[in-house]
Amino acid sequence: MTHRSGPRRQLPGIGLLLVVGWTAQFVAETVAGNALVLAIVAGVAIGNAVGTPAWAAPGVRNHALFLETGIVLLGASIAIGDLIGAGPRVIGLVVVTVAFSLSLVEAIARGAFGLHDRTASLLAAGTSICGVSAVAAVGQVIDARGDQLTYAAATIVFFDAATLVLYPALGDLLGLSAREFGVWAGLSMFSTGPVAAAGFAHSAEAGQWATVTKLARNTLLGGVVVAYSLAYATRKASDPGVKRLWLQFPKFLVGFLLVALIANTGALSPASIESIGRISEWLFVLAFVGLGLEIRPARMRESGLTPIAIVLCAFSTISVVTLLAVRAVL
Image 1: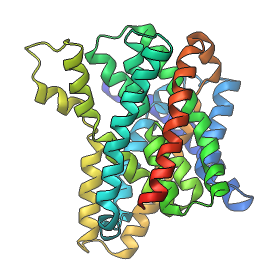
Image 2 (image 1 turned 45 degrees about the vertical axis):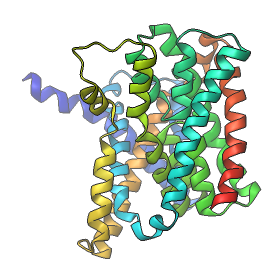
Image 3 (image 1 turned 180 degrees about the vertical axis):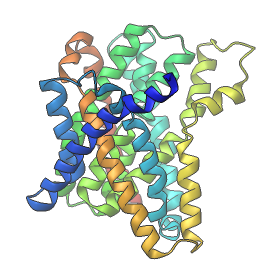
């Protein structure tokens, strides 16, 4: 009976995501706004007003799975031919940005703020690669304490929420094209969910570019994890490097690439690709409701202002530098 109770416990939370997500979609279609932005705003409002009900928590936790599945299916709408033309330039920007961000955050944290513990490295990883996922992955190999993980993760989530609102407005103000805005968001914002949300808030094309650019950053997570484990000399001989690399690798990227390849061979009809795109959009809506439910601005009081000040200094520089680079290169 135990194995049957699991799915039943998921249903109420998934139902909550569906109701809030449908409401966001309805408001976007009948009144105004972007469904993804409305979904995450609704999630934040509910989460901070009443919290996530205990009966809904098991199902709400599926939002990460919905996000990854949505990204996989998004591969069907990616025109590989269009990406190949700018591919090398985008990949070059990704590699340079990640290296620059890691170095900058470490330097600011240790040099300007005198933060010499593992929190500096956690902030650098979260800022440079994929947000809280990178914080957790790097924290595992450098033996970070629970409070250090909490401070770093809370700081990243705070900036995820702030940039999700700020970036679409800046994109319009700066007059960026869909490709420019998408690549800029993918290079400089932190976590995959907010990057995709900000991109699609601008336009469908910007959302695709933002997601692809962000996924390119995510693929560097394994290498960064190995580099930090070597730097801190915490890896055990019994734990093979290849195994650790695979464990930290964002595996949904493989699915995304496979779906993109299949779609671009002509194996899928235009109607099938359109249907897959609609399913992907709905999965994103559900994922962003769940993401919003987990954002707690009040938690930042527990971590103090030092992590915020460090990331603010670094992020301000990174966002300006990447914006200039995108306008010069693309």
